[in-house]
Image (cartoon, rainbow over all chains, first blue to last red; front, side, top):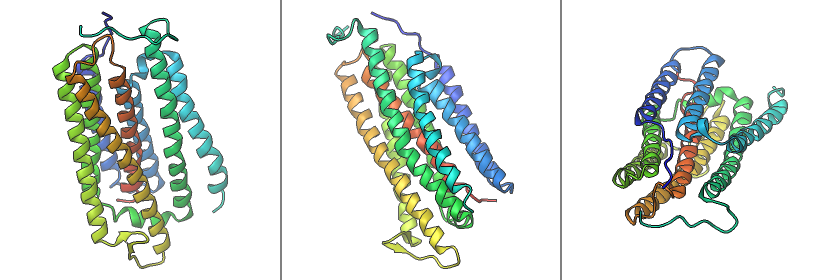
Length: 93
Length: 213
């Protein structure tokens, strides 16, 4: 029988508390008029929530580097897709 | 211990087999990231074309139901993570309970989402079928709702697949298919569930929070 190091229940619950706190923060900030600042805050908080899920719930924090590279590759190609598309669309108007 | 781990002949040991499964799953998830990524690019381009229309349209979405649903889905990710943890530790009862809780939360999300679709239908916000919105930005508002229904619709399909997967995993757990030596299906199902959650984490601000101030 192999024993696997698993994070404590407490860790998972704290991550969930953090996720709900970020949800309330993004919801609350949406009511403060900041122009494009609202979009920036919303996206920043979404990225923070995604990182919490990826590193703790999906265990990338303790994963083998090959898995980290595979995960990073997905987001890297997404960045190319977004970046190169925006060189057109963001400069059109 | 109910059954020994079956190691396929191309692998040296169970650990190597498990690493290969994890890698395969992450490669699949990368394709999912790019699949949804194309939709996010379409959203960005359309929003840049007519930002005012997206501000108007976003205010027509149901913020209360959208926010509650975000909390429901984040909580389902917690129960899924705890299900994977319990399975790894061989806690069969807890594993089944957390898997079922995850499925229940997933169904709750869909119930709220479809209630919301009903309200959108009532408000004539369904493009092509029944869309009525006047004003200078009507075209842009309709584009927003095309994207709204397509992105949330595709997300819901993923969630339905996730719910079926989690229920199958719960059934397998009751048959004692998993042990601390073998829990790959639960782990991979968990990765899928969390990715569907991440997609919603981005959909929520982009669809519901564009211009609330």
